[in-house]
Image 1 (cartoon, rainbow, N blue to C red):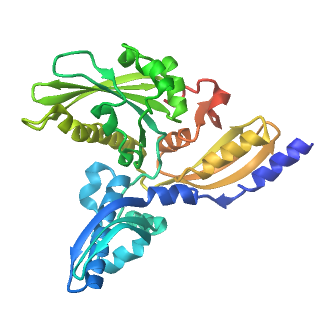
Image 2 (image 1 turned 90 degrees about the vertical axis):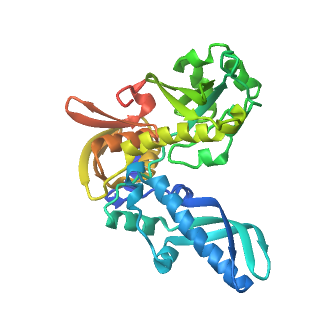
Image 3 (image 1 turned 30 degrees about the vertical axis):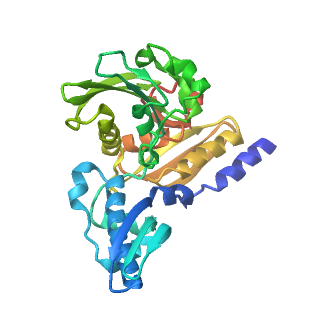
Length: 367
C-alpha cells in the first residue's frame, strides 16, 4: 500500500501540467561562448558599446546555425539592435583590454531561450533543441608512408578533437583521455574493426551513446577520412575527402577535416530532429515501471524532452500508467528525443508503450 501511495504521489506531479526542458539544459544550449570582439570608437565607452553590439550579432548567427538545419541557414531573421538586445539574457566578459579608443574582449552571450523560440516559430523555421547523447570520437591517423592508422593520444589528429567547441553542439563530441584504461582497448591494431560489444564499456565511461571511429589518411592532396559509426544496433560507414593545404604539413589540415566530419554528423542529427512547432499531435501510451524510482526516472526523461508540451495521467496501477502526451513535431522525432533520455517508445499490438530502455532488454526497436 505504501508503494502504491508513493507511485500516486510521484504521478501527481505530472497530472495535466505543461512541461519544458530543465533550465540548466536550455541555458547551456542557448549560450554562445568565446565571441572575440575588437572595436574602436571616439571614446572607450563607445568602443565598448560597438564591440558588444557587434558580438551580439555574431553570437546570434552562431546560435541560429547551432539550432537550425544547414539548408535553412539562409532564412536567419535579421534583427535590429533593439530586437537583438531582447534576445540576450546576460553576457560575461573575459580577457578584457581597452584603451581610450579601442576595446578587445572574449564575451559569452546567454540568450533568452523563450524569445529565441518565439522568433523562430514566428518565422516558421523548424529547429532542434533536442541534444543527442555524446558521441565518442576515436581518431586514428596514418602517415603518408602508408602505415596503418593508429590511435595516438598525444598526436595532432587526436588532439584536435579535444577542442571544447566540439562538445558544445547538438551532437556533443567527446574525445578519450587516452589514459591506461582507454589504451587497453585503443592500443589494439584492429580498433577500426571493433564492434559495440568491445567498445561499449569505453563508451559508457564517457556517457556516450555511440562511437565514431575517424581514420585520417593523406591521399592525393586530400585528407581521406574513413568514418565508422559503431552503435548498439550495428555499424555504418562513409568516407569524406577534405582538401589539404598545399605545401603545408598534414597536421595543418586536421582542424578543417575534423570540422567537416563533425558537421556531417550534426547535420544528419538536425535533419532528423528539427521540429516544426506549427504541428502538434497527441499520443496515448502505456508506461511500464517496476518501482517509484523507475517512474521518477521516466518522468525526468519526459520533462527533459523539449518537444513534449503536456502530459496527462489517465490511469495508474502498481505496475504502470496510461498517459496522454501532447507534443510538437512527428512521432519519429518524439521517439528519437525520448531515446536520448534512455526511454524506449515502442508499438506492441497496436498500442504505444514507454519504458526505460533496460526494461526492453536491448531495446532494439529504436535504432
